[in-house]
Length: 329
Image (cartoon, rainbow, N blue to C red; front, top):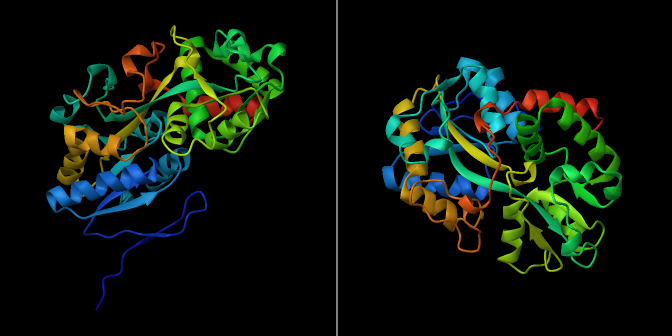
């Protein structure tokens, strides 16, 4: 007789998921190619079977909270850290082993030590020089709320990536300044489905500039440049909200019945071999493991002059409320 696996309710319109009790279950909102590369390499190295359930940052974090201690998930991987803090605030994470945390810069380790950074991405302004000469670039991301920028920039403001950027702004600038900026966004910006659509709109001259994460541009540049040939990147630096660096996160569920293997997986992800898997996947995200080298095309992470924002306290719930109040969500 065959084994019947539990069918879990779908989140965000996904198909039902049949959890294999013999596999390490990885809930992931990280990029498909990155997660699959890590899982495949980990299984080849250890012989531990893995199974991936994919979803979006916010819906997957909420899914785990809804499942609670009954969740079949052993590991949770996110694109941006606010999704992980949702699960952390629900007290559903187990502490990450000290040996794993020693693999990365202490600045990337939360004080709770309940999860860890596994990759990073930088906020950038993609612009079309024929529509926006370099001499006219905004000095700060905050400038885009000004009337002079009406209809001159775009963003995927409904996505988790952009909401992570707003969470960084909220942590750095506070609620009044963030609310004012969101009001300007509602008035001035054009909304696109995702970062790629934003980038392509800038490339086509639909808007002079767009706020995205860096790796979309570099991935296109590594290919046929079809979506970026008419564009350049502007790094705000100077600890500006526009220089915000978002961390992808990894954590182990407290309810995991395969805790040892789950901790082993996180350790592998941050090992030199695991970080090389990230780089070789072509995702163009930053490696964060000690001694790891990111893709040569990327400016070094330490040169971006990111703002001193504590990524472990980013409040996605408050961001959703502010963006809803502004009529954006």
